[in-house]
Length: 355
Image (cartoon, rainbow, N blue to C red):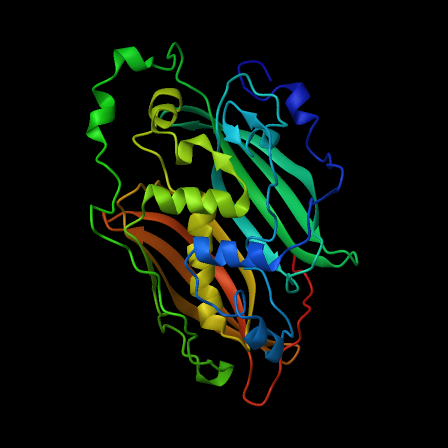
């Protein structure tokens, strides 16, 4: 392994599992509300106890991609809630960028559920990047409820960047002019960015879906630093590259503070839960992050149906999804599967994991 960043010590971590960790508190109505508010998703299944109780789910739920909250994480160099992600000993101090996730959503995460998570490192490998060496860490996370039932599984890819040879982080005194190139985040004085209305889409049925049809887009923004801090408060992760401009520029070599990959995942998730409707099920979602978004960007989550199929009597709808910003860049893309009911059919609330 000479000449690589992946030592025998690092390779030995592949296959290791973490000790299961139960969250400090059960999912609360406040947590579900805060997450929904932070992602500006007006779905009443997260915020309206009466409607949620009358629905087929029979109770208030947390948005499915945000079932874990870091409670009072320690504050370290990379922020609060990030230091615990650095179990892999690498020869550089690098923030772990979100490279992508493959979720399998297997049952609702109800308010009142105690969530326990455990991870296993599946792979660690190195690639050459434009700005220097990159180390990819792939880990599988499984979340269970208080009854030991699997709520979701997710395969995470984190990307760790090494600084180019001989390059050291810049000091503020040497680059004071650089900070002036970043315009002040919106909104401007007197401008209030409205929240979306509280409504649900008309329920779609499997029989009506046509391959090639587009999903109703979800538009967010212009993104502000307040959006980023609100999301940090909702999920308890205050990574500095999302709110600390000098740190992002001078210590991590970024152009600006960046929109959280986890927040962009939520926008794409809303696109798919809207498409599923109250009677459908958002089953699987795989996303790859391809670029960075910044305060001031307007983000549009969109998608299209690529196929429909039946399995075990249920209608599966496969989709491609993308996230584009107002600067003409596509910064995330992926695939998803939504299960839609046939007319007269009620879908189950528990699903099996796929390979």
